[in-house]
Image (cartoon, rainbow, N blue to C red; front, side, top):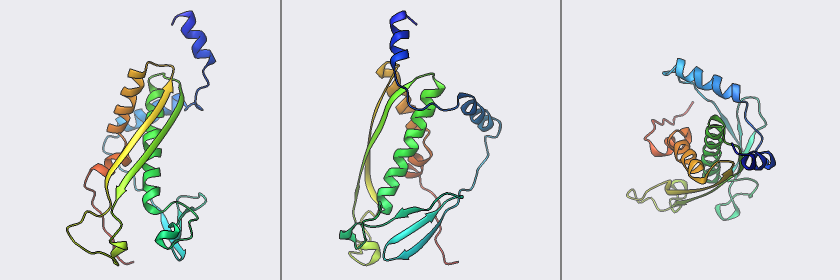
Length: 182
């Protein structure tokens, strides 16, 4: 690295770094157990109207609500907005992890997400045309990332992270989903 590049790198304010050793250990654990599958759990409790509290591990609950035009109190993101937020967070985790693995210091990582969704079925109480596409028909993500690597390398990290994102792949793939009474 040239003296100028070293000076520039020292002046960069990197995002709070990941534990490099921990990242390597996680990668090695995955390589050693390639068939490993974990089961994640969440419990959602309706408090009334469309106010939902979702509990994960021992964390404080996540609030989900609907905006007033969908008869909610507008206290939190609605479920579809939460899905976009989850996708954005998963992609950001992947970009940050892969930048760290490549020794790239990211100074900025922002994701803008938007999705097109037909809501006229109104959860099964509105237009019930069975030929319509329910859920998101399109989702667009734009990632603004900067760091101490050439933009081409950062773009490659973004592309690579998209390929390996669990949430992005959940949206792209058919997933077995069952819903039943307890």
